Amino acid sequence: MRLTIGMATYDDYDGVYFTVQALRLYHAPAREAEFIIVDNHPDGPAREALELLASRVPNCRYVAAGERPGSSVKGRIFEEASGDLVLVMDCHVLLVPGALERLVEYWEAEPNSRDLLQGPLLRDELNAISTHWEPQWRGGMFGTWATDPRGLDPDAEPFEIPMQGLAVFAMSRTAWPGFNPRWHGFGGEEGYLHEKVRQRGGRVLCLPFLRWVHRFQRPHGVPYPNTWDDRVRNYMLGWSELGLAVEPIETHFRDYLKDIIGPGLTEWIIAQARAEIEPAAAAA
Image (tube, rainbow, N blue to C red):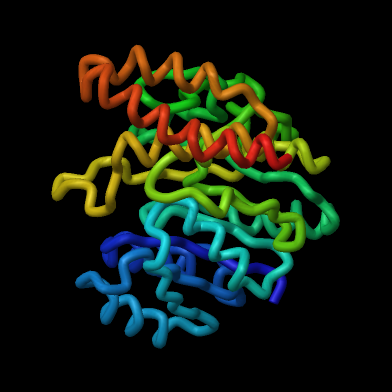
């Protein structure tokens, strides 16, 4: 198969169902694609329904992956995929009409690409977009939404961006650089993956036609673990792996977390991450 579409999920059957079925109903290439559903909480209440859905969707596989909870479980999709082009989507994302067809056409013209392919977020009003993230710290995250005028026209040429949210991205299965194997929990992948692709000779591109809508609101709460120690640790491990200075991470979280968890706990989290990084750096 030329195209694999994968999504990771944590107790979000509804999101998986409507994302998969919308792709199959409204995007012709999805009807011939391989689907992979990676369940990051296979002991949870959604497993039986997810397995049933996978059994009813042609070329769809359910993969239980609860051994390492966290957003980096998306990398498991590349390990399981058989397609040349792998499209990774959050399990609560919709693509605009024609986007998948144009992505396949783009790939067929660039089959040896090592680039990370992304597109603009279409906001809920459906009349405003965010083409990328600016590489700056805010609110305990690296990256802030921004709009490049070149992406306003869906027919415009692709252009390089510093980074983008990873709710939708595609790249060659064989060019996939992988996430840091020591990560755990939520956070750290945005910016890290983009720089890792560049360090390996690829580009990070915005394809203006690859527009997507993301369900951000969670009225029932976030079901997966999302802790500050995981997030700080992931950022520091990832940046250290890439040879980037970790001091900006420490500076940001010292300031941001001082009134949330207090300076004492913040320093402990940073010290724990430093203790993991320094032996690896010395060995290298």
